[in-house]
Image 1 (cartoon, rainbow, N blue to C red):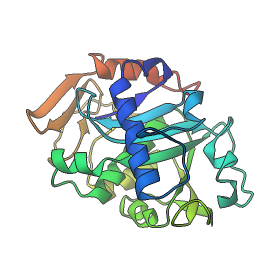
Image 2 (image 1 turned 120 degrees about the horizontal axis):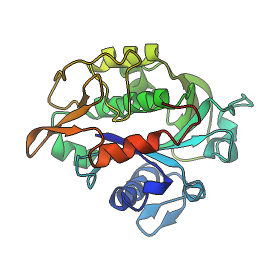
Image 3 (image 1 turned 180 degrees about the vertical axis):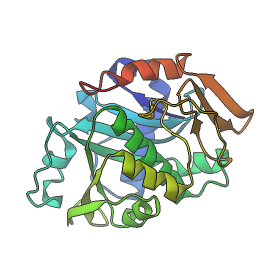
Amino acid sequence: MFILVQAQQYTRYKSLMDQAFRLRKRVFHDQLGWAVTIDGDCERDEYDALRPAYLMWCNDRADRLYGTLRLMPTTGPTLLHDVFRDTFAGASLNAPGIYEGTRMCLDEETLSNDFPSLETGRAFGMLLLALCECGLCHGIQTLVSNYEPRLARVYRRAGLAVEEVGRADGYGRSPVCCGIFEVSESVRALMQQALGVSVPLYAGYCPRNNTPSTTVLSGEDDILVNQNIELVAWPDPDRGLHIQALGDGLLGDAAEGLREITPGCV
């Protein structure tokens, strides 16, 4: 499932947080060779100290992480403006409706073990789709992120039109690009079509029409939510289809926290 972990929930989801920081060290330091701050087997920076929100892809017990990214408003300090300024060549990327998504990564080994038929590119696409749905819940209009050029193909395969506004060398083994993408229902629909996903992935997403419908399975690796968000269902490797009511346990807490990230959100 995909949930949002905010500052007041860090203690409850400590296991996920620890796994996320360790995963970031393996991906950005060990694999990509980025000049990031290492603390033991974890990667953390000064922006984590600002207590941002984290989108987490995890199992239903919230003790096994599949992927993560960090969300921060561009009206405050951001990695984009302070570190990767050379990648966007003076473009104006700070506004209340623009959020920065950073440190996006997947635990490919864990995903392969739990979902052996799920291809890595599609997994990235699912995390991006959940991010789009998360943005729609909070009035976010645009997301901006830095990424390596090879990921542009992954974005296209996910049906996401990312506009590259610049790129620069000097951050690691490959150039780093800066890209922006629109957060809208039309973008979400294109991504769903490209990925073959027919229902929401993000636990907090509520379709605008609020029309109830039954949960429809679209594949063994999909994470599924019914249209009125009263039930959340996803395949579990050990127990088959797992269904949990919104407002019960993890999803209830996540849904309550969603209202706090951006003024005026659902």
